[in-house]
Length: 546
Ligand code: XMP
Image (cartoon, rainbow, N blue to C red; front, side, top):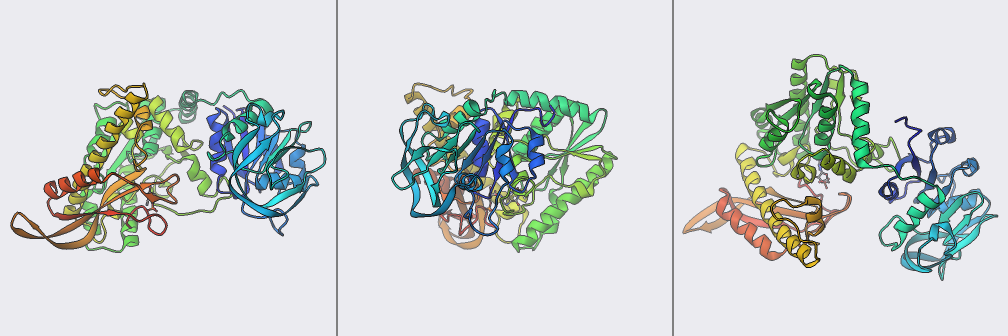
């Protein structure tokens, strides 16, 4: 579908922390949404032909010199605009209202009184709890604006110029603390912008397959498959579109989780579920040789990244000239790399994927470029990819290489794989038992033989970590087993709750589960005589150990 004919809303990013959340909320309403920097020229915005525009929050004050701004013409395009927080203040200032430092700073959950006759507050309670976070406030709304919400300390918590379709909200409807926020955004999308809401995942997969087929023609396509959800979904889309014109190269660098290499091969390899050329490269030995004796974390990452590229390049050369290279880039990568919004580049991780400099190809295909992670998962399920691949935990490109503190050896890899396998198995078992019971109690019992995994997960206990794994410390200590003295390694268990992986808290996994894990690891994994739980939050720790 042509980019400007698809119904969409655009989010204009002023650098606030919830900007991706705004876009996700819009998409939850089945309306496609993209984020653009506030620096995007007005002509480009007009050419996109959006059904609506949302201005986000931002860290500055609108009256500061060099503060991020927008032109008055943005409000004269005839396109509905909703300003949130900073965006609300900016709209007011640009249109002639007054923004000033608030006499009382509002932060946290605050009761707001709304005018229910406003389209934005249709079906919202008159008194509703909203999330406020502002130092400035709109002292005087711009001319033509009617105030539609207030709090005790904030005279203009929302306002609108109905005739011009301009709306502003001082608080944050996109965060869940705003109890009826989803309703407000849905009202903007449907009641103000008049969207039809036809952005659906099954349509997405079909649309992509058709578009890929047209683009690729008879060309040859190469994909670096890591077994992670993004590259797996990208590979399956491609295989559905062009079948054996696609070759997937899966590099086993010897730093994968237990059985992972076999699992990926059983899904994508010969006799698996898909029609494609699958090459599994057993490069384990090469990586172990390169890593021998290296203990500095950054150097390890570099060696793994470079060696990976070399292996991939060698395989690509054997295939000869390819026309297209597939990458599993997803929307947050696009935004984070600074191509979309304003958010700063936080980190540049090694991902088993982007290798354009090293392979002779014509063009890159990024079929998931527009999607958020949960949307990629939906497409994956839609395409029939097994649940365990679709819901796999994030796994770093350098793999166990950064979960083994110090130098990497084949034996240490074996230890960490075995300990991690036990840990994951026991935690998932306990979470599932809890979930089956909770589902039963709520009147929606799950089929234990063939459960709906998404539903099962929705009943998991609140302690279930978003990411958890075993790592190997570089510490050996004295223990006793039977009547024998031991001098073995300590395994560190990590388990964190996180929303965006930028910050994280240690998950409160029940002691009984941890104890079972400890017992099993000590008894079953040779070379380990201590098991510890890493309580550190992020910051100051990182999720991985190196
Ligand atoms: P940290 O350790 O930085 O991890 O707190 C945050 C998230 O990123 C993952 N991670 C990586 N992912 N390549 C990746 O693809 C990497 O080099 C890498 N390092 C960390 C980590 O697993 C966590 O989910």
